[in-house]
Amino acid sequence: MKVFVCVKQIPDPATPYRLEETTNWLIRPEEQILDDTDRYGVEMGLQLAQASEGTVTLVSMGPAGNGQGIRQALAMGADKAILIEDATLRGSDALTTARAMAAAIEREGFDLVIAGTESTDGYSGVMPQMIAEILAVPALTYATSVEAGDDSVTIHRQTVAGYDVVTGALPALITVTAGVVEPRYPTFKGIMDAKKKPIENTSAGDLDLERAPDQTVVSIADAPERAGGNKIEDEGEAHLDIVSLLAERKVI
Image 1: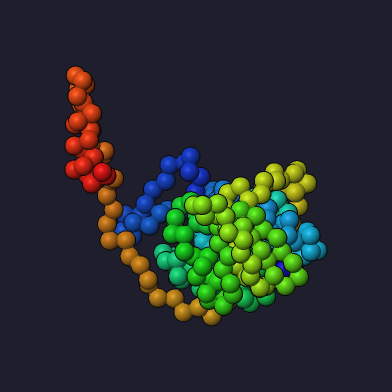
Image 2 (image 1 turned 135 degrees about the vertical axis):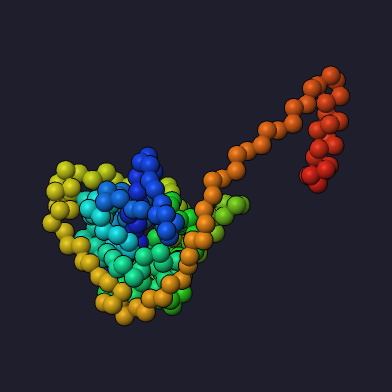
């Protein structure tokens, strides 16, 4: 099985960061880490590839930096990585990103694409479904468990009431939730091997993408501070004030 896992390098959430004054875009540092939610997708891909004697290829888009985040995923056991880096793609929205990722995946050929439900720095939550639509394959989302056969994949799809059992034909795309598997920790050997594994850099031109500006951050502002609540003194009938407040908010 030829598995592709979508991963993203993000600034360390524990590190302060800045926005550009002219564009309001995030200034991404050289030192970036693997998005924590992507570790579950990488682990799932490794397990499926191992069961089928297949391969795992990482695909990512964004500034390469020192490549630490990509190397973290390679150290877990992935075979290689494709990194889409192009100045003309800077500031891309979710759809442009999906088109670039889909083009890189389609060029290589695939059986299964795995992604997290959303990135922790963007939170759009729509890009994996866009990739599936562009590739014209089924999208099986919010998987809490995954089983793959020769020509199909079956997941337990998380719902508010429990889970649905969903099966789709391969090739397909799935998104996995945190906890679908327990991600492995890279071994010392894996870390050393990751330094030798290939990272293929590609551009918008390589993928025959026509890039046009698709979004602009007009302004930014600090989030408003939370206002103080109403303090109700209870002298035996405070419940009436609470009931009145709930009725006013149409809760009851």
